[in-house]
Image 1 (cartoon, rainbow, N blue to C red):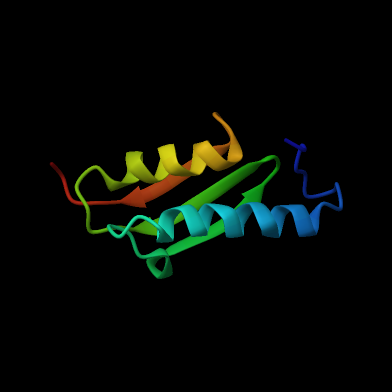
Image 2 (image 1 turned 90 degrees about the vertical axis):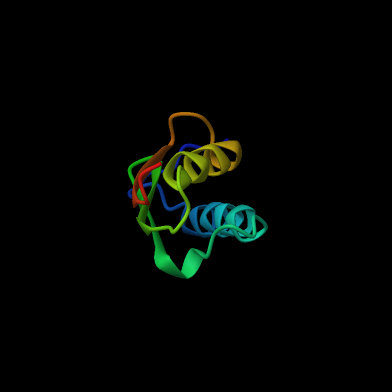
Amino acid sequence: MPEFDCRGGEGADIAGLIASIKCALDSDSRFETRKLTFRVLGNCVVIEGAVDVVGGAEHVRRLAEDVAGAGRVIVRISCPAG
């Protein structure tokens, strides 16, 4: 996995990584990515927003880390308490 950095000129790779994460989330019918925002901070992908699924934030983290790699995802998502 390439190291992403805002200074690294990896724009196409970053866009592809975010698209891959969105695709993984869209394939799970429990989530709508239009309520989420995605951005890159250093070599991490930051996902922010809200989901309507109990435990959704952790599920989003797991799906995103399957694509981006463990420890490379920051999740700031609100969801209903379980």
